[in-house]
Image 1 (spheres, one colour):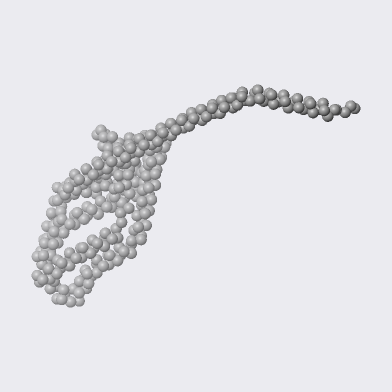
Image 2 (cartoon, helix red, strand yellow):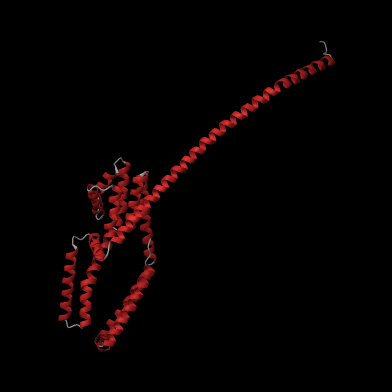
Length: 338
C-alpha cells in the first residue's frame, strides 16, 4: 500500500472548500431571492385567509345583529298589542271577560239578573229573620255584588290552574308532532281535537281565529284575552319570533315547556316556604270573629250593644277598615310573583 501524501490531501481539501465557497457565493443571491419569494407568497396566502375569515365573522355578526333586532321588534310589537288590549277593558267589559275566562256559558245580562235575584233573596231572608237594618243592607249588598264576583274569580283561578297543569304536556305533544314532520297548524289542530280541558278549548279558539283569516301568531296572541297568564305570553312570543325570524321551533317549544315546568316547581317551593306565614295570617284574621262569637255565646248582652247602639256601629266600621288594611298588608307580604 502506498501512503497518501498529506500535502496532496490538504490541497484536495482546500480545492473542495474553495469550490463550495465559490458556488455558494454565486448561488447565494438566487437562494435568498427564492426564500423571499416563498415568504411573500405565504404572507399573501395568509392575508387572503385572514380576510376571508374576517369577512365570514363579519357576516355572522351582521346576521346575529339582524336576528336580534328582529326579535326585539317582535317583542316590542307584541308587548304593545297586549298593553293596548289591557287598557281597552274597563268595569263592565272586565266582568264580561272574566265570565269568558271562567268557562261559564253565561252572558253579562244573565249574570246581572242572577246577582240581583241573589241579593233580593238574601235581603228577604235577613228581613224575615228580624236582623238590624244595617245587617240587612250589608248582607244584601254582599250577596248581590260581592259574592257573584267572588265566585267568578274563584272559577277563573281554578281554570287557570288546570290550564297551567296541562299546558306543558300539550307543548310536549306539539314538539313531538313538529319533530315528526307535521306543520305548526296541524300540531295546534291536534291539541284542539285531542287535548285536555281547558287547553283544548283555548287551542280550539286559535283554530277558529285562523279560519277567520288571522295568522298563527295573531291567533295565539289573542289567547291572552281568555287566558291572561304570563305563560301564554311566553308561548305567543315564541310563535311570533319563529314566524318573523325563523329558527328551530321544536327546540324553542321544548325549552318553553322546560321553563314552564321549572316555574311550576319554583311556585310550589315558594308556597311551601310561605305556608307558615299564610297560616299565621289566617289565624290572626279569624281571631276577632272567633272571639266575638265566643263572647256572644257566653254573654250575648255584652256584645249585642255593638249592633244596637250607633257608637257600636262606628266601632264596628272602624274595626272593619283596620282589619281590611291589616289583611291586605299581610296578603301582600306573603304573596310572591314568579
